[in-house]
Image (tube, rainbow, N blue to C red; front, top):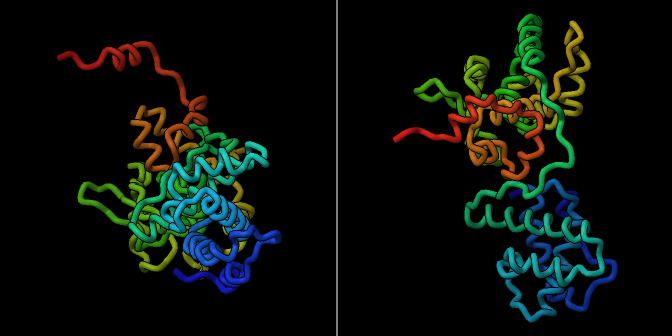
Length: 307
């Protein structure tokens, strides 16, 4: 793992404003843990350093060994949040818990090849899905676009609605990450995750065409050189606005539509959550978009198969 120079310098130079008495004893381990997780973290590195310092100092005061595996046990983190963060608002303590669990997951992934667990909390709000009619009309609009615009629009819909990828994942996928199985299914290997992501059958043809590109070519907007191009999605959608009163293409709404479509098909919640990289509880926020079953279907499901 290689950190960018700015992040590396922040970690190396870090010293708490009011260092605890234990700082000199824990400093090297704190920096090591944050350095091991910073490259895979969406959180501010200074915040990770701060919360890890608090945890390490608390562990030493409790007489725990100077062992990061013990510091980052789930039970240790939970005890720290309950007993070591009493000076904080409950919401802030829960945030500390999330940051520390992220560090644990990142370090475990590096050292033992463990997959990071899905988030324990759902986002506060979810984007409403498109209606089936809107999705059909958006695909028809995309198919009428000229040249590269057509390929980009269909790729965006195939990755976000056909596979349920997030914005960052859509941006990262290259042709080499697509694999066609003998069954005809298309599997997407997203960088940084081991999730099983299988494209919906209706969008397989779009991704099959993308496999003809050079392996290092991005699937969406392949002419760009950088993964994190500035305004990657907003600049494209600003230039390509659907006609006929249709809403703009949005990765978040397309992903929501994918989740709702799977839930509406009554696919096992664990399978959906694993494919989405979410917890099962997080899916509850999408449930009110899922149409209720008619009575005959509900009766058949509840009755089960006769022996």
